Amino acid sequence: MRKVDQIERYFEPQLKDMGGYPISTVSDNIFPRSVIYKDGNGSYQLTGYLAPFVESFVKTLNATLHVYWDHAPEENEIVNINLLNDLIRAGKVDIPMFITNLGFTPSHRNHSHIVELSKWQIMLPVESQISRALLVVGGGTKLLNLCIFILMSIYALIIHNIRRFELGMAPSLMCLWVIFDPVLRAMLSQTFSMPRSSSLRLRWTLAVLLLGSFVFYNIYITNLETLLVHPPFDPPILSYQDMRRAGLKLMISEPDKGALTFVLGQRGYNANSDLYEMVSTSVYQTSRSQPNTSYAYPITQTLWPHIKMKFIRQEQAAFRLSKELVLIPLVHFALRLPSNSIYKGAINRYILNTQNSGLYTYWRTQSFYDLLAIGKTKQLPYKDTSSSMHLRWEDLYYYWLIYIVSVNICVLAFVGEVLVYSIGRWRAG
Image (tube, rainbow, N blue to C red):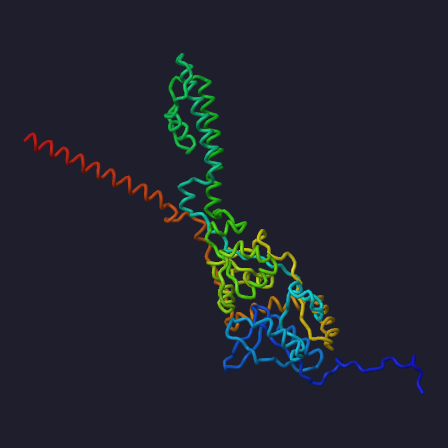
């Protein structure tokens, strides 16, 4: 008879080698975690970063992955979460290929370790840039233009009153003509005529004017060139009121409505109900993944890296994550498991190993290229930014408009003068 202390293990580990035993899973078809699509033969396939995550786990147990296709959705349609939970409770699914927010189901205790930490916030279209034509005709920032105008007025007052003092006259504020000549000419680095018999005081004043105009002219040109290369944006959207002002709506689907009501409360949801655009889950996922800049979208940081990868070759992305409109600052995502799941310990160890080794991060990055290969997403081509570095004809639109209007006025005035002259001669003759 063997002693008890000589026995290392009473039972053989059940999950050491499962010998091809099937492990069932199901997908919720949420982009980009686990995406259902059809291959060239019309068969259902899975991609997304949770697909290799679950497949690799099944391989570590020497098991076979069985995907539950009975409730496969239409293209881009999200599977009902209640249906998925019923499959898990019924024991038809061993390891789900989707993750759930633990905050929405606090009473459910059968879940794995935390798989992801994220945020739930609003993705906004980037505010439009101010027209370069307006920047050219406006001459840069309003504050700089105001400072230059104040400086020109001070120079004009000083020069005008120095001349009056030399002539024995009282000071005066009527110096408008001095602003144009010589002050404006000096600011534009143009030549201007000096009085022949000017005093030393006036010469020093004009010398200071030339020096100041040189400094401010270079500041003005540098600022204008900077604005032409990097035009400023319209006022940013920081609140729901700003969204109303901009006429921007938040596109949501039916699952998002329940989540928003859970987070904001019924009163908070109804307060901004005019901003919500309710659509089907397929339309929602299609618009969000294109992405359609006509709407704002609630997203987690799971999708945001894919959005950035779409525009990585562009000068700037078409969307930005709002730091002010954050719905949930910290979201815990985990795998929902059946009651008394024999895989709970194994999947928890597997989650820790994949996260510590960097495999999970790699799968998240690689999923973009997998989705790109099957046409579920796209990457915008490189944009030539050299054209934005130079002054273009359309940037001088308002100058051309002023020039054409002025020429037409001059032509009309000339025609009027000719007509008046001809009528006068006709009457005299």
